[in-house]
Length: 222
Image (cartoon, rainbow, N blue to C red; front, top):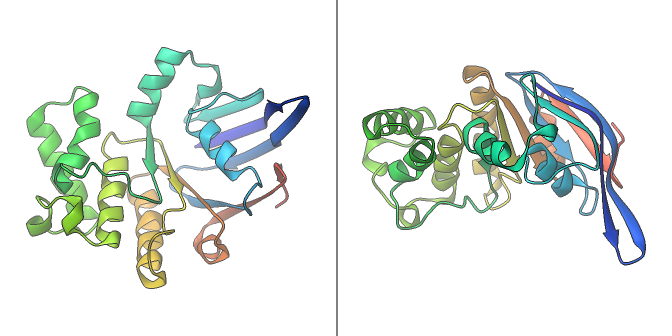
């Protein structure tokens, strides 16, 4: 479960203080696919960085599965991001000289998982997201955009995270493939019992979510 309470983030720009995220509170249960929707400049990217422990709030708390991550020190935050949060990016961010299988194995290697277990789990995850055996040893350049995003989702699941954050996950995909990817995320939220939050400007994606939050000028408006 993700619980955010009175979250605020302020930046100083010259003599001006900008409040990018303004007193946001929300709760998303485990097993739920949710979206945060808003136009450019609404505060989506800042909120995503806070939820992903990539930045620290000015005030307020972020609680993931019973742990207040907003109070963790830098070294504990690095470990937490590595082991408990999965990220899915618009541009996939796969390592081009590694195979699909190796890309999914990589987060587990950083977490100290043995090679045999890495390979077995990576193969199962790729099967789960629809990457067949004959494509698992291909490098990203030999996969379609939709296939690369499936690999990226499998990689995000590698360390069994409690929270997955997806930043415009269908932004580089055609509409038909995008719908398939959103359907996959919804299914994985249930089967993996994880909280998935997709940040998007696309109302079509929001319509597919179980919970949708709308941001405007740093405020939660719905």
